Image 1: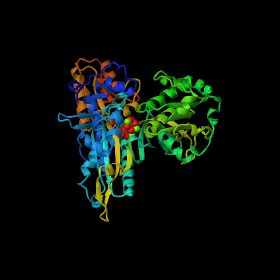
Image 2: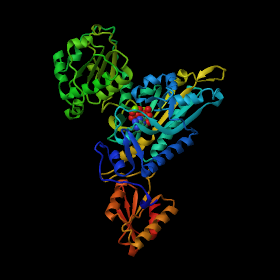
Image 3: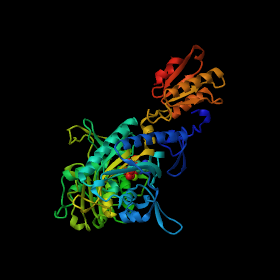
Length: 569
Ligand code: ATP
Ligand code: MG
Ligand code: MG
Ligand code: MG
């Protein structure tokens, strides 16, 4: 490919809303353009990268014996009613009607479709297991589409669905998928961790996320310094829930004492604390989560913590108005959220409340140490109270696997695998005959990879202040042959020869043969776009010498013309 023939509108302008390096560079490098909120076009360069990632995903999926198919993007609402997700999915599910008034959705994922495909077509255990996947557009009407390809509304996902006769067989396939995913991220050149995850809205148990490590990641993960253990902070909350103290407050006649210890002895103390920036920020986040779907009265308790960093708190403060807590509110509250401790807590609580407790009425209590749970609340005075104890894994806690130290880090969710069980097959009445001739619902797994999100994730992990640095498997072209001055015939011819030789050697190459672009401009395009290597044909050509530039290190090396191909092989 030649620059002179290719549409790659690079620009120095950074879009106003682009805070992430990947968002900025993918737009500035001419990989993508935005067409609407959360909607992107892939320009020729971006399409090449997307296809490369897609090809790696496809190859590793095919290696496992999974079958590629293509399911329709638009699915009848009726299928979503059968599974029960038409209402559960909430506003992320975009519904619309056709001219006859029939309801449809733009698929955010395809469990319903695939169950409908397999239902009545696979009827015997003898035809199981089977794994079906496709790589196709998804649509989710995200509340906050942002960060470019990272959180689009329309995006490309690989989603696979497996069907089994036994739970053991599902677990076997789950491991096969986990291994295939590891190969995919390794081939793409990404640093990642596999973490225990919460199943979120999709449901089922046994779920793992694949987190590409990056400071800009939206997920906080807990990882061990010494072993492979890793968990999404949301899952780490739940894991501890089972192991630590569990107070059955409905049977205890407890007083509101311990809640108000640690410098907060009265409701007034709590109120005072609630007006600090720290508390305001926490309240804002939680309030948003709870009020989203319910009109419940909500009250918060916060225990002060000297180590809280006020600065971190400031962000969310102006987002929402504050809640005033007073004694009457507490007694009338149908949901009471209490939390103590450091800053990772809001997100955990937000998530758990959002996903698990939103239909419940009760007392939510978060604490990091045994003595700081809400053990002192007189629940007999709370209306219909239930109690949830959430415990958060702290940095520095001991890993239960190996005794190592747990630390928090940030990740980009690049993949997610689930053991679904019979959730969808039961709801949609999809059965097979087992070896006793008895009808059983299919036991299912599902396995997603954010293909377009990976384009952004690669750049989050591989960039500098000049632009992108693509990894070998993801680079749109491996080598950029830069003809310093394409008006000089010798330079252009030498460039063309190197370009042809590299292509013959099987190295993907692009030739910067633009006549009207100056050398400095070509170099900055090389740095911005991020091809792994450049070969600069310039002033030393008469001596038979060109320069190889390594994009990652920006180191330059002079090599003779006949060495170029060997050096880049
Ligand atoms: P997130 O927590 O980031 O919202 P999710 O848990 O809702 O993601 P899944 O339902 O697990 O997403 O979908 C499988 C994969 O699809 C995710 O692991 C992610 O890589 C990708 N993905 C999900 N939502 C988006 C989006 N809005 N834009 C791009 N990729 C996405
Ligand atoms: Mg989501
Ligand atoms: Mg998620
Ligand atoms: Mg997920």
